[in-house]
Length: 231
Length: 213
Image (tube, rainbow over all chains, first blue to last red):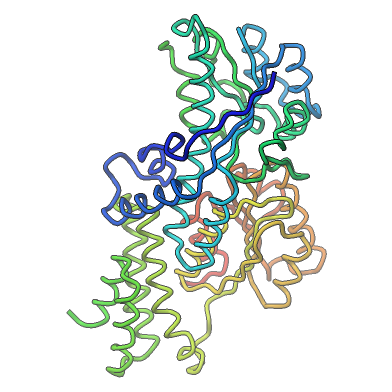
């Protein structure tokens, strides 16, 4: 069953910390002018963001077909260990919408690079937040919410080749909410996310960061999560 | 404090309008354009670079300083050209064919311009041949390639091979960058350099052209 989800820009607004982290700024490390840029960028997000998503439950067998995709995944991947032990799976695609991307480009063209870059980070953090909101929504729907975690996994990460977007899009059809895929498996609007929401006990999501592709991964929160032994 | 120091300090604060006004005043006071460039603007950007590397300031501050740099450079460029001062090396930049991500490429372009390079930004989704054609046509000595998808990285190899096939190796250098791009990949495809972020890309380009811009 596929379902559309929409949020207000305020509901989908990213945290200041998340945006500043994308700018490489540690907590309390932003200059007053950088904080001012962030204020302006968040205001633009409130003005232009059109956050929406499409979610569809999928069986393990159906997901195996999607995951196999074009056959370009890494030989061993975390999802192959996680999915067989999952309580539930749902494909998702979410976007903050095209107007934000257009404004980012316009700001660069108008010689406003600092604001453009900050708005880009706001939009990226906002897109990531949509996946978190979908995970929280799925968790809230579970009767055993305190005994499971819902985490999102996306093509292009953790050994799931980015070409897997093709099979995911064929199964989910997010064109319905205006998210399309180009020949290089790039989503448009750019500030979009997609993948699978996996509902499972916390220990199911944990794995040692011993996969070859982890060495080059810059998604540090993911690596910390993988290495964590805490619930 | 002399006016050149004032220019440097205003630039460090990212005060682009103030930098423009101070550069005009410096020129009115008969400071040579090259002196204003090196002892005002470049001096200020050098401090910005040091503070960025020391993690005292961060990307937004660097970009605001770069914009202030442009404000001054725009006033000086015609004067420098008239005096026969050679421009810094020219760089052709773009996101490779199939890739529409351009934030990283834009940041590299901004910081290269801030460092005094002449940047020709071809935009995104640029075919391999176009990078080389434009580099030849415009006399660029560096081609900078950005890719944020593993599916678009192979185009970088196409560019490197085209540079070689057209007898340009050594005269036109190729630097690659982007989230999935590594030093190992750069070596594998025969690129001349890899930049792991915008600031590093500027340092690598400086090394490639063997000149302080």
